[in-house]
Amino acid sequence: MIVARTLQELEGAIAGSCVTIGNFDGVHLGHQKLIDQTCRRARAQGLVSVVVTFEPHPLRVLLGSRTPPFITLIEQKLELIGSLGPNVTLVLNFTREMAALSPDEFVHEYLVRGLSVRELVIGYDYAMGKGRSGNYETLKVLGRTYGFRVERLEPVTLGDAVVSSTRIRDMVQAGEVWEARPLLGRFYQVRGEVIQGHNRGGKLLGFPTANLRLVDELVPQTGVYAVWVEVDEAVLPGVANIGTNPTFGNTAVSVEAHIMNFKGDLYGRRIRVHFVQRLRSERKFENLDALRARIQADIDLAGRILSEPEAQPATLPREATRSGPDT
Image 1 (cartoon, rainbow, N blue to C red):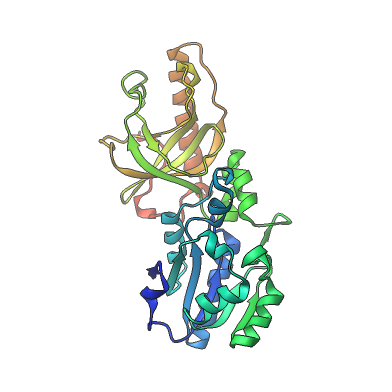
Image 2 (image 1 turned 60 degrees about the horizontal axis):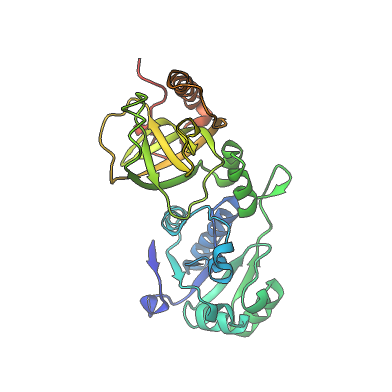
């Protein structure tokens, strides 16, 4: 997949395209359906399949600090989009000036002149341009004017409700990571650099942890989770704690992952934590022995959960996975 950030990078490379456009936060089942249909239509018509998205997210520009946390940051979003097979992803720099463009101005500048669009695939609720005035009906009129076809897909539903970024965000923030997996088509993931922690996990408790530096990621509800931890090409079972470590009187929220039977130095390396199931709430223990015993019980429970077929990381390298502690 070609990733471009300006139209100039694609100049002369696209004679005709089938395009889908959106923010694609989470790249969930609804987004996957849009991108899959775009690729199918492009192949059928001999066109270039193009996904158009934005960075920063339009809400970040328009709402500033009031923006809700995002399900996927741009690095993961591009990886997920690329796995679905489009020829090109165009990441446009979203600005207030772009937000002020009328639907006609945006379509003519970016889709018609820039991408030679022949077909446009949109979601059931898609709207664009100033005041979100560029809805399906408006785009159909513009399609007749500029010579492209518009297809609007029906929403994807699970459990009698529409799959949406808002629904997934609410589930993750409630700790319902197992329930969010069907909507995403994968386990919810955060990624970050391993940084120096308080040196309590291994030295004091006997359970070393990798402490993650996160940026703007959506973090699940505080508590203890069964997780898969991706380290380079290996996918290893683990337990993650999200919270303040109340037994030690901390106040700042951290994400710490204990990787079962792992030995090695992870400081400064980037890892990915895939949340499978919430085990319990975070709590304060009366002493270190009680905390150690509960951590061991959490590890044992996580090992049993991760050994179940439905908990296997199907979207990750299966040959690198193993579940449960060594015996």
